[in-house]
Structure formats: C-alpha cells, structure tokens
Image 1 (tube, rainbow, N blue to C red):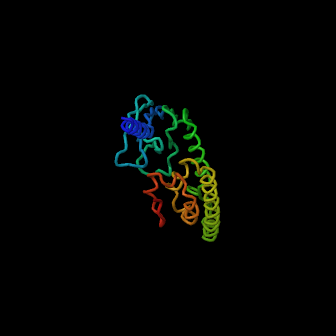
Image 2 (cartoon, helix red, strand yellow; image 1 turned 90 degrees about the vertical axis):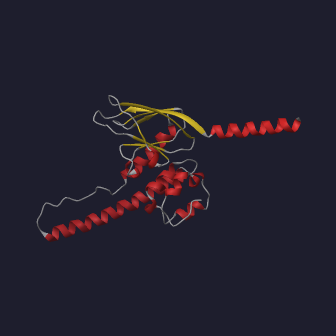
Image 3 (cartoon, helix red, strand yellow; image 1 turned 90 degrees about the horizontal axis):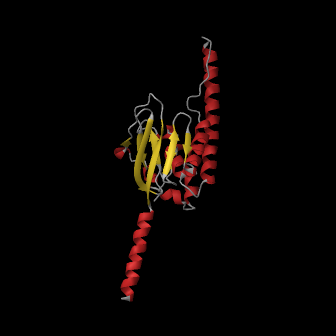
Amino acid sequence: MKHRIILLASLLLITLGVCAKKVRLTIDGTTSPSQTTLYLIVNEDTAHAIRVPIVDAKFSVQVKVDANAIIRLHDWKQWPERSVFVLIPDSRHITINTWNGDIQGSPMSQRMRAAIDAVNKASPEGFHIDVFSEDPEEWARAREIGRSMREQMELEQREVIRTMIMDNQDNLIPAWLVYCHPRLVEDWIPFLLKTNPRWAKHPIMEKVKLPYSFK
C-alpha cells in the first residue's frame, strides 16, 4: 500500500509537471482599420498558422501553448525578421496595438519588442544615397560611399545582436534573434553553444540553417 501511494504521488507530480508546461493564453488588441489579415504562428510552424478574425479593427484569440512558446503575430506567414509583435506567454492575457506598437500584460514580450527594435534600428536594409547628377563618376562615388556605410551599419547591427544575446542568456530572446539573423551570428555561435544555454534547445532552433548543431 505504501509503495502504491508513493507511485500515485509520483504520477501526480509528473502529470502536474506536464500540465504546468502548458499555458492557456488570450491575445487581443487593435489593428489598422484597413488591415484584413493577421496570422498567429507558434514556434514558426507556418503550416499550422492560425488566421485571426478581425472585426472593426479589433481581434481576440485564445490559444493553448507551451510556456516557452514563441508566438508571432504578423500580416504575413513569411518574413519573420520583419515582425515586431513576437510574444512570450509569461501571462494569461496579452494585449497589443499595431498602431503604436504597444504591448500590455507581458513584460517578456515588451523586452522582446525592445530587442527587435534595437536590431532593426541598426539594420542597413533600405539605406541608400540619393544622387542628383548624371555624371557617372558621381554615381560611382555614391555607390562606393553607400557600400562602405552599409558595411559599417551591418557591423553595428552584428554588435547589437551580440549584446542582446549576451544580455538575455536566461530567456528566449536569443533564440528569436538567431533564427531571424543566422548569417550575422554564424561566426561566433559556437562560442555561445559552449555554455549550453536554455534558448539553444528551443524548437525554433531546429529551423535555423547553420553549419552547427543546436541539439
């Protein structure tokens, strides 16, 4: 009888542990009046993306996810690196506003947003130099200056990503940054993996195309 009680207690603890890994989450918020499409994607499983209904620029959806899930809300299934609403379910209710970028009810999602904004701000994407001349030499000079400046901006972006990853070793922000910017981290990711960080075991890492294993 004593052994049976111990066994039942152990099974109960295991069951509770499994249940504790799941979170029932409500995500709602406000969108642009012209927005008609919004996808909810868990751990970048785009094949099972949920199309969230939008009514009068409002939406609300309930999902049950792992407590360590990374949830992306975006107009498109593609281009995760352009997403700014990447949520971590550290609460049961998260509210966002796509007009002003506001996130309420989730400190970790706010922290994720700050990291994404910092990386995007340093990005050379979209940078160009206008040339108001028909002189080929002026165009060539402008192209060289533009190339040099984009190269410098990329170096700065690499450093921002490196800083964000090192400052967030205890959470999932590095997993998202590595997933979105593998080319910018591939030269020093082996060093990070030596510490066996928790984020390196996240399911999203299996989708990262690098010559190194995250398993």
